[in-house]
Image (cartoon, rainbow, N blue to C red; front, side, top):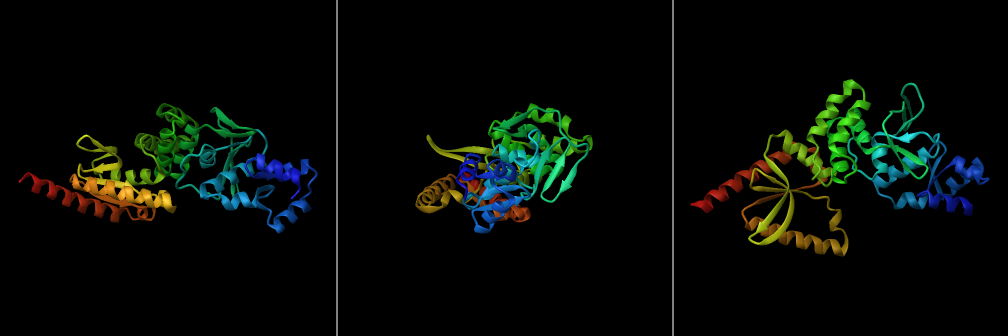
Length: 310
């Protein structure tokens, strides 16, 4: 690869545009050759990423690379919006298509193109990431709730509040910048948001518990006498510990040690009289099954407690 383009791309998180290349004297034919060689990948018209950077990235980072690459092909006043803005801040995304980049631009009405949606600008303050722009986190969350629904909005808002990227008051202020007919669903998401929630999986789990009308305490601290056993994701119906398990933390040798420590902690929690239910990502698509397990565990937990009191 042309060394100057390689240096430029590395400095831009691995992405570059055809315009970036042209400024270095690299033609469209040269770019086509780089793609054929496997050195670079074309993400969209005029938007490119270094192949090794792309292949080393997980799904969330790949989407962020896509957003950054596309923004480099747009006018400098354009800015990422919706879930594309969330990705710029490293916030949780659920329920929004990671094949679609959303931007605000100087247009009179929304335009939908393959892999890109362009909408008129909002007057809300934005952020800069070097020479790239984004709407602010509160507006991005509200936009996601308005377009993609309650669950998508709650996951985004939980993440933004947990990482202190915005406040509840700022979320309410951002409501003024989405169409009035879409504000109700965004407002419901704001009311349900919980800053203690640490992941999208926990957000989705909490929504299931909430919709079922179960009583629960998020991030509950478990103690064995004076010994602090740590926080659990949820204590449900006062007797069932519910943990969302992303499993990533158990990879490799260090992960094996972490898993063993987690098993020991779980045993100690069980000896205190709590039932323990672990939920993994794939199970979140079967909320009825999750509720059945928790309900059964609560029944067992209450029976165990009654037996202890006899």
